[in-house]
Length: 160
Length: 469
Image 1 (cartoon, each protein chain N blue to C red):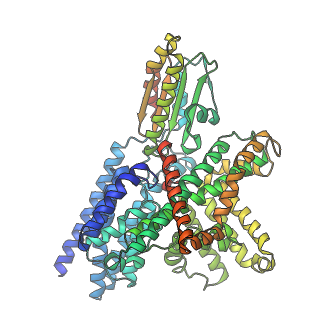
Image 2 (cartoon, each protein chain N blue to C red):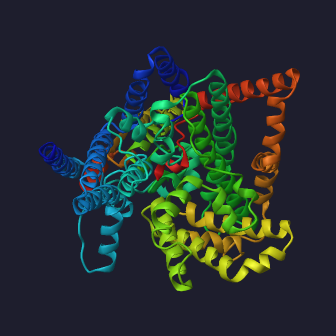
């Protein structure tokens, strides 16, 4: 019986090693970034044309996207001053990657609403909206409507 | 997967119940185990590995401890026990506190250690405490070792209380794992518990939560004193109905499968002191800390300084258990201080005060406590408290405050009514009363279900507040 117990004990140690390997794998492949949202926002805003954009508060996040900024690690929102402009920049740092789906959904709703508003009479705005970038990377989400949207995405990815 | 979702209510639960009641008795635990693993994997496909590790590792540890103890090899049993505690706490500590620890090291020391913060596995704080209760009780000889891996796996992963409690101690369900009895009456009782919980979460917590979210989004300096108090009151009700709603659903589901779980709430907002409040709030967590930390440290049967130390240790751990952030530690210590003050300074004074004064005193302190709980950091918490006290506030009352008060007055009245035992006792009389009364109770439950479903169909993902712990 003692031999059996020793075997059981060995299995236990193998399990601990397997757990450590699993955690190591998670750390290696983990997509979650601990970069500060202020730093990511700074890098992204430097990469695009910010002339028409100005920073908005949490109430605007709620109004435009229907999400509560306090539910997330951090939210940065920049919107155009005029209703006739569609430039927009949203960066969300999630508390958990599980939140990604809901935020993505909210962004798509906002995009559809904007497209609906400009359809038929705002071809330039529609083009910008159609060329938007929506990038979900682990615990970070970027949504940008700007003629330099791709550059913004590059800066975003580099900052994580 | 969450209980308050259309998929759970209309697909997952009916299938599991059907399978559970169709299979012979010896396969019932297997149905619960498989369903629980699917339930967990639904939201955490990667972290299911941790859950399986936890089941197998603690199962083996329990057998080993029991074997060495039986052989009289106390030292060997102790080593196995300590290793099990270290592994369980190490796993919880790593996933919950590793990012927090490194962040603080980076702040305090002139270093910049880069790290990848991993997302917190859902429910890890709850199931780790359950595995610990098992290992400790086997080591102490309080429970028999569980030699059936299926039964043990069922205990650890049981989906009704897997994600947000109540924290079920092994000793409390040991017998039920093999000898529980399902019955139609128990199933009906469980359904009623579940529906009450669903109503609390979807109809009450989610609705008042919207008010809190809107107020919390107001930048500091723009909210008036009254708005800040309305926001705080909204959160006070949201967290109670959210968490107790989840617990009621868990207890109800347990009953449907023949289990009896302990009550997790006992009308905490009717408490007349902070000590009383903690006898009524998250009872399973308080009991766990009392049993496995407070009493082993000596409890209150020690000198006054040691007793104070014991209270502080327990409350710092309670704070940390809730989250890897300083505001939670502060929140825990806040309650530690309040409990010490009540025990050593206010006990006699409180005893002489009229009940309504004691009630106001308790609720004020509880609401202040929630500010530390809902704030993202300590600085924001003090900023919000400042607004509640008029420091940096946009006047005492503004149009916004009137708007929130006017729009939520009815809701607040409903929430207060639902927070006291009188309402439930009256309702229970309907359930147990004449046939016509019972019909009213039945219609009420159907109404809760229909209204909650209608809300859920249009709602976005709305998890329980305690999922983050």
